[in-house]
Length: 265
Image 1 (cartoon, rainbow, N blue to C red):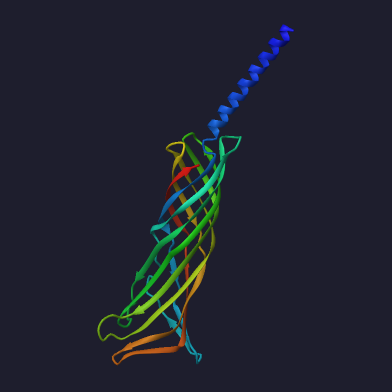
Image 2: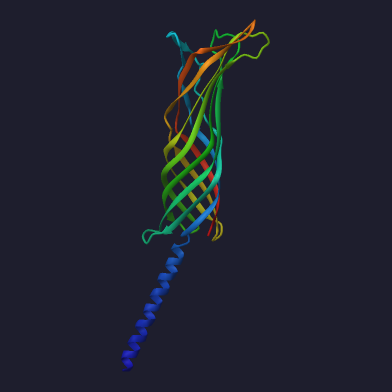
């Protein structure tokens, strides 16, 4: 009876020690488990090169032609890109210190690029190409990371929604100048693939900092168009309405670096 009690006590102690060790291990591995919310900002470092075709025009009577855009009409979208809020949840996996989760982000983009360069022999005035990513954006992406203690490195891939607008402007501002005045615009919006990776650092058990790289794919080409134009001459301005202008614009993928600060619940 004594031996049985001793055996039972030893078994119970071993089981308790095992459970305590497992609990400690889970506590260590669960540092990144939970949900979080915070703020983020992004800077476009490269990419976003915008290419544009000449502006084609067609009169209602069937005659048509091409209005050449500015030379070197390609321009880049780079600089401060966006600010927003983010949220997500993570949970620790029981193998290789892996952490799985999902990221969501909503914000406002404010990225713009332009080129101003009239071609040789153009009439008085200027030509300007401008492309903007100004508007609400949203992103969602699952991610997988490796728990390194107070830091976690991760990779993610998902989808981004955003919009773009492009303009071809032609005007003159000098007194008495003669020029075709044109403002041809177009816009597009949609969902594009995105992928990247980064590192999260836990300053405390609740405060997290992030540095991240994201590649956001192009939305493809879209059309800019305008009905009619104004002709500025020595006798004043005349509106011409029986003609339609069209051209195509396409922007490359955008490469961004991002920072974020989050609070874990």
